[in-house]
Length: 226
Image (cartoon, rainbow, N blue to C red; front, side, top):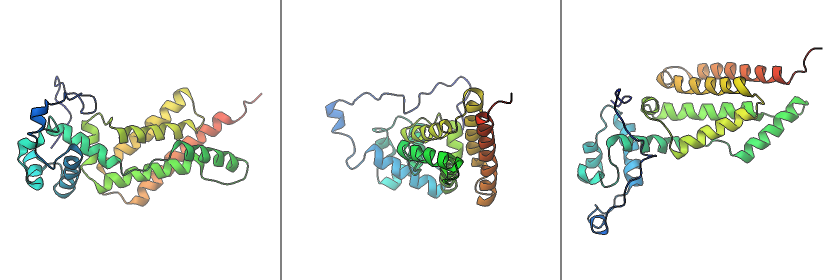
């Protein structure tokens, strides 16, 4: 099973490493019908079917009908491919866009004035529940998020959405940092138990967490006592 890098081991994330272009002659020798996207999709299917412990380049190549060496035209290591697979399934998340978040923030302001609306709390709950579904549907995601830096485009989009929702709380400085840390640790910590814990328990814990952030935000908005 993939684990975090050993002490002293240096490895560059696939999202940071620039692969030099192969000479034209060698590109023409690459296996036909393959590309990085197809290999990544096949990796996700294999991980879902057999789990992380049984994942190997040999088994992946057999499923694609090619030799294991053929895969190295497109990725340098198995760890690179696992990083690509991780970010691909995070693409199943549909974080709210900045426009939707802006509408939610206006709804929250209306709710504070008696107009109703979910605002950032409802959007944060939806974002967290979506993450839980991904982890539940793909059990190999949780250990990989602990092993890799998780900086692919879909992971960054998720974190950007989370950051914008926390900005909408109005919290600043240490309170804002603490809210982000609490949500991040809650989501990543649920990975090991998400398949065992009922969804209702997860949602209850999430409600408690969001209520705490709301209370902190309300206290900041409250006028200071004379």
